[in-house]
Picture (cartoon, rainbow, N blue to C red):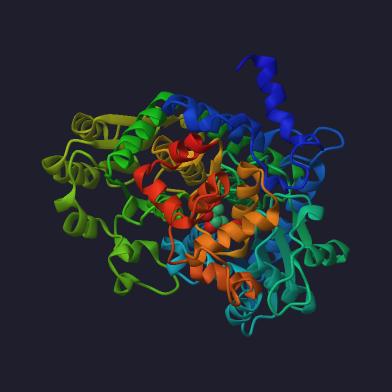
Length: 604
Ligand code: S6P
């Protein structure tokens, strides 16, 4: 796309006429409307442009952005609240909470900042909550997101006996009832709780839909927060997602950036006599922007991974991430998101972490008893998966030069004995040659190697101090790794034909947000009225040709519960709407054309 056309596409979504009924987080991104027909390299370039939108400046009269004065001011205020708790942690807690990706990031950040405190011989003050409990860190648990009471109860439990709590609720779409229940509870107990909400829609776009057993909506909670002197709303717009509604991508990245900016500033103020300032916050956000740029400057290397993973998924193979340290946590997260996002099987994309649950260190300990999909150690990979792998599958090693590169090499050799489709993705400081020989050996074993080299000036802390620099190295590696893995899994599913334009059609309809999104998508693609689309969706969910009995009068929770055991409901409903055929015929049409994009294109 030429320069000016690109600039106008970059900002097109901000126009009041652009998909006016949708909140920013659900709009489709004009930059990616052809992503379904793009090559691996073009996909990566499109994702780069979308990510750049996170850091765009506020244009007058439109949305507030990451670097808007008000956002930066609020970030500084929240950092000061966190600083107070760090200085006087007795009976106090900082709780980070969310659903899906937002909850996974709450875990990642709470774990890292607690680790930093322990290194300073301080007691941990951070706790995380994820809807659905720890199993949701590793698998798709979308239903608990709809339960405001569950959110409230889990917050109460974590905070038992505490006298002061800084609560950070994360909901990218300002929509999750689970988080709304928690914020409502905080507002009712201001003597203990200071509520903070992180999301990426303007306040008036917060979801205004009744929730089971509640007199409030997410929207009304946000309004109450706006009127409350002791509540904070951090909600810059970051632009629509590359795949509509896929908030694991920019929403997740921006959540990570915001939490790190706030908590790093608080830690530096509490322990390094560096007061929280707006300028410091702006600098820190700028460093994250550079991380995005450095990462995407390796477009070719990322595209090679997208292509390899895409080929594997197309050929019925799988993609395995073998990671070390916190980068492995990001790989577990990325893999777990493929099921709800692309309707993928849990075996399609899997993550493994060196050290398994001992390294992960989650609230509930080891979850291996839940079944093979919860076996996440490298040993599990070697015993359960490697014997079955062939050259059709892709294995990706993910590490940094601060990890045990000798161990990486050992594992690379084991994998290579079985299959050739092995790739490496690692971070390194410019000029760091400490593991050069081993790295050479790894390179020889791999079909492709993506090496992101970071300027040495930004990396003075490798090994020794990985914690308190305002722009710490792990933060850069992690964000960079998140971007690359999101590109790999999203790109691979696009190449597999799972996306139509920039919409995920085969979305799992497992909570109310996804149910509404599915209905809207059917309307958009079929041009039929909403009620007719909802009827088609329900027929596909219940697998009936006619809606009889009490199905139409059941609530969304009942529908989404039923949908859990069903696959391809949205594509089937779409085929019925477009052709007028029966559900049985639609399902057989989809069986003959498993590539959803082609099945849909043929009918449109
Ligand atoms: C989205 C991801 C979901 C969301 C979850 C919470 O790509 O698959 O699991 O993270 O639905 O969304 P939100 O808007 O409350 O942060």
